[in-house]
Amino acid sequence: NKESQIEKLGFLTKKNLKKLNAKSKVSVYCPSSFGFAGETVIVNLDCIKILEGISSTDAFRFALTGGLAEIKQPLVVRK
View 1 (tube, rainbow, N blue to C red):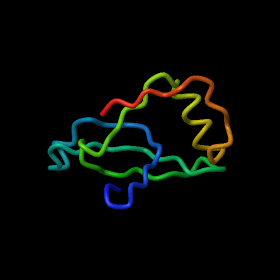
View 2 (tube, helix red, strand yellow; view 1 turned 30 degrees about the vertical axis):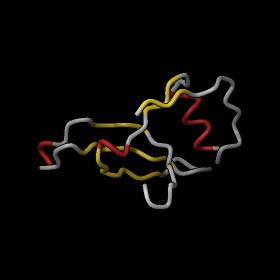
View 3 (tube, rainbow, N blue to C red; view 1 turned 120 degrees about the vertical axis):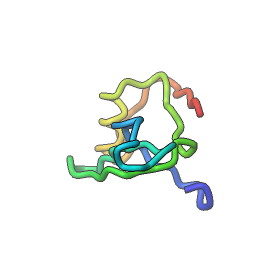
């Protein structure tokens, strides 16, 4: 959310949503903390920041633990 500057950790699941008539949008799965339930959201591509330097396993662990899991390497954010 650009206005509130709240960011949410998610996993890019589909880059091409032409079949949904959603040009320049992507689908992102956002896991819920302390459970495996989550939600899939459709967002504008320009709202996505790519995290580099972290494995998907470590990122998922971080999300599921509500941020309690330690991230050992500093993240690089690529817009």
